[in-house]
Image (cartoon, rainbow, N blue to C red; front, side, top):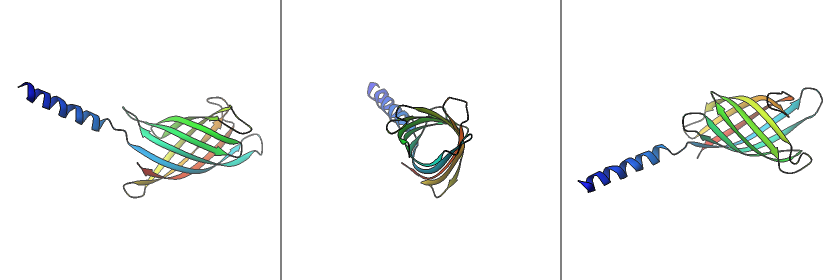
Length: 142
């Protein structure tokens, strides 16, 4: 009886471990940003991982690069709306933090790829819109 209970416990543990594995997507974005009150604008690249979160939503982590330098990008998405934080790690804006908010849409391209379109506003403080941005990526399921 003890062996049978131990076997059932092992199977339950294995089933829980498999179901707890997060869904992950790798995305390479090409995008552009502009400011509302000046002519400052530019191109950027994001290289990020989307990871599903327990209870719903997504976490995003990765790298951001534009003509001001390289940054770390982190954030969360729920109901196709994302809030991201960018911190420059090099360049003219080293150490500066920016906040991004955006909406996205996906267009399936088979079972392991999707086209992700993203757009929104960015600012130097949360909730403040200093400019707009848009980006597109082909994402691959990991």
